[in-house]
Image (cartoon, rainbow, N blue to C red; front, side):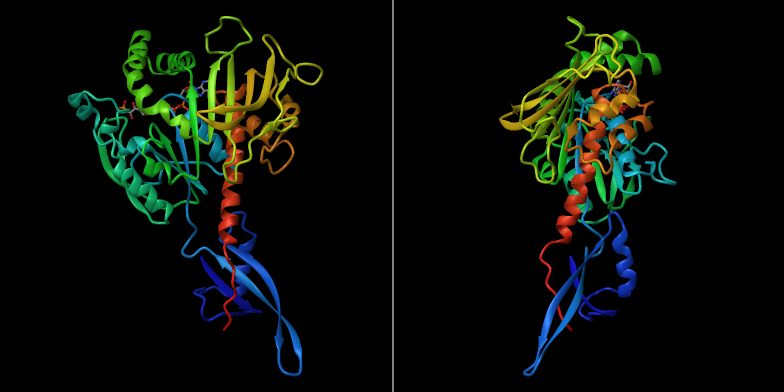
Amino acid sequence: MAICAVYTTQLNPTCSFSTPASKTQTQLGFGFGFCQKQQVVFYKRSQSSSRRASVSLITCSAGGQETVVIGLAADSGCGKSTFMRRLTSVFGGAAEPPKGGNPDSNTLISDTTTVICLDDYHSLDRTGRKEKGVTALDPRANNFDLMYEQVKAIKEGKAVDKPIYNHVSGLLDPPELIKPPKILVIEGLHPMYDQRVRDLLDFSIYLDISNEVKFAWKIQRDMAERGHSLESIKASIEARKPDFDAYIDPQKQYADAVIEVLPTQLIPGDNEGKVLRVRLIMKEGVKFFNPVYLFDEGSTISWIPCGRKLTCSYPGIKFTYGPDTYFGNEVSVLEMDGQFDRLDELIYVESHLSNISTKFYGEVTQQMLKLSDFPGSNNGTGLFQTIVGLKIRDLFEQLIASKAKTPVEATRA
Ligand SMILES: Nc1ncnc2c1ncn2[C@@H]1O[C@H](COP(=O)(O)OP(=O)(O)OP(=O)(O)O)[C@@H](O)[C@H]1O
Ligand SMILES: O=C(CO)[C@H](O)[C@H](O)COP(=O)(O)O
């Protein structure tokens, strides 16, 4: 962090700015600006008089700000890509693979965020895993040392040459250059498995999709869209289950937010996975993250909003909210069971939620309407992913502001 005292338009010679003061000050208007300005008033005393003077302090991150790192963990086919697209949309701008790079790159870059897929740290390719009899979920098939070193380097503002796991060929391709973004999202099977990587995360999310729902989504995608047979889908889920239980699922205990997706309880005995009960489990006491609440913070609430303001066909919609414990941690849980008939009416629900980190009234509804063709837009998966996206934006802005505020002391020429 460079702290520069600027006397009117003259730069303090001890500062490393090459930009004129006026130019630096125009940068202050940027939403995610690198610089902050403070006006400090002081008195110059001589033996006979005291004269009022002021100094502008411009606080900037040295050589670009430190990258904020977010971890998103889930099994394959559990909605990570969908969530990432919702998140990058909150920040605006499209997320695209690196320009002119490997067409099979797993990376997505937008103005603010870079999303890297941790499959790129597989140390064994498809043949290697087959020969050794290990799945991709097994830590032995992944290079955590490299993952740690590279995430740490990016967080410190350094570019890295990250490997690429090619899902088309099943091979490890030559690396691609990843430059430090404002926000780095590491998504995949193991963002919270290795303690060193976990400690680098500023915020972490786990998508906890119940077996019944995972099966329904796999059928929908792999059978309908990829031509796999029902038997092969069942066999693949069964083959992954022991390693999923051993290495992936336990990570949820570390997550700051968990989105749990279960079959509905509104239709007795239903496990079709079409109508969903979705729970947003939010850890208490996480810096820059204030859990969302319904009506009254800390109370236990049950709300069926179907009435005059919300159209609900069978089986309706039910929200619950309240405090709980999760792996020994205090949490708040917001739950939505059922689905919306009319997405524009979501504003009614939004207006009863607090701490949703919107910048204007109706922003959640606007985001949901904008991405209404994404899977889960009519239920709690889309709603809670959108809200978590807004909370991440808020956390990012608070983190940046807090770093810009760290001890400010004028250095005088
Ligand atoms: N909220 C949702 N509601 C209904 N279906 C969903 C939802 N999210 C994801 N799906 C289904 O699951 C499939 C996988 O979603 P997505 O590609 O986002 O997951 P992923 O975790 O990134 O998968 P992979 O790791 O295999 O690339 C989608 O094609 C869709 O069929
Ligand atoms: O669990 C996975 C993460 O997405 C994949 O199965 C793993 O990356 C291996 O990929 P592939 O099946 O393409 O060899």
